[in-house]
Length: 359
Ligand code: MRU
Image 1 (tube, protein in one colour):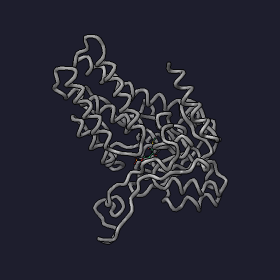
Image 2: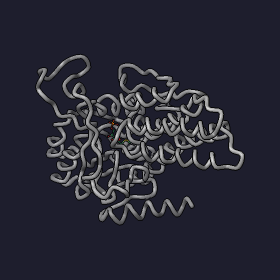
Image 3: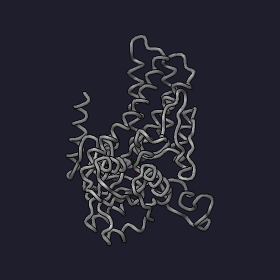
Image 4: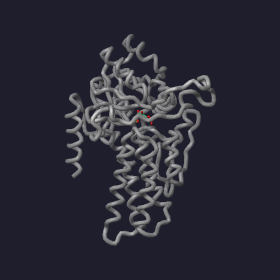
């Protein structure tokens, strides 16, 4: 999101977490003010905030919220409250690894602050809030770096297909897949975006269209079943999507429907790019088969708003994500560079390079 935009995805507001309520977009732009860790957890579960990096940021702010609301006077007591908050937040959504990455970072911060000589509950609280705010700021910086890395893959006049929302709304700002689009625009390229509507929750129609329109980037919404037709007519030059978790071999979990788009792209010889921060790469998960896939409630598929679309008692399926096999991915764009096949080696090298750079 450019600094000039008048909206924000989420932020720390003194003693509360504020976030744009994405369930109400595009018809209403309203902000939630969350004053307990339980409220933050429910906002994540109900998709008021969503998108892998934004979920991680929200969880970190949730830990900060737990720190300021805890009435613990001693370090041990405060740590117990924070452990409970982390456990609650970890139960919100299973697929986006950024959630667990952010909670692990917060756990390390708490452990380090608590082990300082003469540590007090107040000092630990302060450290937790500072760390959560830095994680949010860092997310925007990483998205901008990732965008710059990816912009070179986007030719002038490119017609870009994206699925779901991997934009400023899915991060602390700027976006991953849409960060690449924004960086290409900032580099002077004229591009246009086709946004899959993204059934069942319509993140493409509601969110991608909303934020690109706010930035004046040309966007057209299509239903998910139109992509093949438009590829066959040579109206799509490349695909860029985000990711919720990338396994060590490059298999990529992202919003349900992404796999189908990747198969179509391969059939039509169109590059299929994944844009994600290194925090989305999960080297501890060898392949996509081990990635937990979230199942959401019946109503997301069987209803649109209050309108029931499926006869009562007819079962529906509702996996929220699918896995695109690495062989269908042309390249993975991260803030540390662009990984290409064989991803087992290239992803590990990028993660290593970052680890060495940060020590
Ligand atoms: O269920 P959601 O809306 O959280 O799913 C989001 C996606 O699948 C995004 O593409 C992904 O998290 C990447 S966000 C930069």
